[in-house]
Image (cartoon, rainbow, N blue to C red):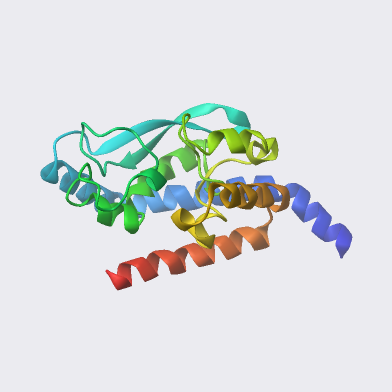
Length: 199
């Protein structure tokens, strides 16, 4: 039994990639009308493009461009989610809702399909993010692809310290497996549904 589990764990990166491809491709097709509607809503409620692209640090420390539905005005300073309060005047009228519900993250399914991201993994940081220096002290974090959701996101998200975020990211990178991914996905769905229900 242990031998079988070890073989599966050795193959899990391939299994994880296959899951990423199937889920992201299916979601992009099924959610295309909804994503289009959200893009139109962003365009109608503020000036600027529907999508905002920012440079992020990815797998093995390589940079890549990550899209989000734009939640802030064109003149806003580029900042992480943690640095922007919900009452910040630089948000668009629907920006806070898009961020709280995580709907702004949906375009990242494209990055998952391309192989730059995974459905689950440490969140990709802005190149100049305050957390970047602490992450560099734990290089194992970059041995897994960044994710749309991750262990830190289901354990407090913006309400935990940077130090604890790094700990969660390193824990995940060291112990990534099907059971852990399934648990994170389950808790992510619960968190997103809870946010929508309380609004």
